[in-house]
Image (tube, rainbow, N blue to C red):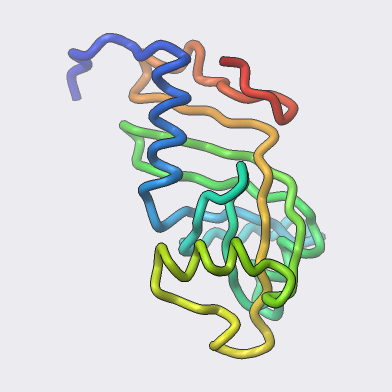
Length: 151
């Protein structure tokens, strides 16, 4: 691939990240168990109240890892339009998150609570965000550190 576009400003990158979080439906969720065994799955999500909200069964590897590990790495895009979010996880029962549950249902048409009691909601508050389009944007890719936007 030939790079022809100039690198985006940090402000433009932040704008683009927030627009993608509002628009996209799928996110790659990377977790690990206590022994370090990685798990990577795509899940539906919604960006709501400055956090990523998603739902999965608490009994599957991703649900257990999110609950027990308390952190996750999320990824949007391909190698030419990367967004990485590292975040801290909080677990909620479906009854405890009516706004986020409603936002996920409105975005995807899916109600996890209707699929059974083994589903939980997970709020992932980012503490680090990186974004880049190709190697020419590697410099300046760190948009958030320690939960604070750098731009």
